[in-house]
Amino acid sequence: MTAQIIDITREHDGALAKACAVLGDGLPVAIPTETVYGLAADATNPAAITRIYETKGRPRFNPLICHMSDLDMAERYAEFDPISRKLAEAFWPGPLTLILPLKPESGIHALATAGLDTVGIRLPKGFASELIRAFGRPLAAPSANTSGKVSPTSAAHVADDLGDKLVLIIDGGAAPVGVESTIVRVEDGVIRLLRPGGVAAEEIEKATGLQVIRSEGPAAIIEAPGMLASHYAPGAAVRLNADHVDEGEALIRFGSAPVAGVELAKAVFDLSPSGDLAQAAANLFDYLKQADATGAARVAVTPIPDHGLGEAINDRLARAAAPRE
Image (cartoon, rainbow, N blue to C red; front, side, top):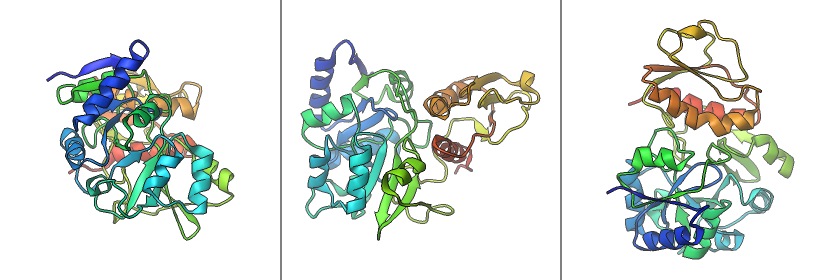
C-alpha cells in the first residue's frame, strides 16, 4: 500500500471529500495543521484509534489530543473552568491544548484518553478545522510519524516515514509553527505547563495575569502527549549545548553561533541565522531530519535561548537527546 497524496491548493474540495470518506471507514489520515502534520482518526471509534497506535507504534498509555472544529464542539465533550475558557477564547484556534475533565458519556473513546478522566483538546486552524466540521466528530491526532521519532512538518516527511502504512496524506505545504502545541492544565486556579510548545508561557501569563507553573523533573504520570522522557528523536544520537564539533558530527546551530571545529562537521544547519526563535521552531524538526539523513552518528546542537519559543525548542531537544530504551 502506498498513500495517495492530495495537494489542497489544487484539489481542496476533493481532498476534503476523500479525507471524510477515509475517516468514515475507520482509517487514519495524515493532515496538515499549523503546528505539525497530524495522524487523524475518529476519536469516538475505538478501531480507528487503535489504527493510529498501530501505525505509529505508539505506547497505549500515551494519550492523544482530540481536535475540535470550534468551542461549541469542545463544550459538548469537556467541562471548562473560567480560566480554561479564558485561555480558549484567547488562543483558539491555535497551538494551545487544554487538559479538561471529560463530560459523562462524552463519546470520546477511552483509548484516545489512555483511560484518563480528562481529555486534551485543541482547535486547529485551516484545513484541519474544515475537515473536523465536515466530518462532524472530533479527531484524535498525534503527530504523523513513527512514535518517538522527529515530528513531520511537511507531507514529504510523512510519506518518507509512514507512506506505506497509510491510504491518504493531505498536503497543505510546510507547517508554519513547526513545533507541537503547548499543553496546559488548570487545577484549583493554577495553570500548570505540561508541555511547552507553539504558545509561549509568557503569552499565557499575559493573557490571564497568572503565573504558569512548570513541573519539576520527569513526570511520574503521563497526563498529556509528549511527556515521555525520550521523544522526538532522530536515529543519530544528539549532543546538546555544543561549543565544538567532533569529526563526523552533523551540526545544528542557532544565530550563526561560532563553533570550534565547524570545518569537521559532516553538514551544518542553522535554525535561524538572524536569531529568530519563531524561525528556529519552524525549522527544528526538518533540520533534525536532514542532519540525521547525512548518516552522521551524532548531531551536535549549539545552545538555544530558553525564553519564549526557545523553551519549546529546548524541551524537544532534551527529549531527542534523552537515553533511549
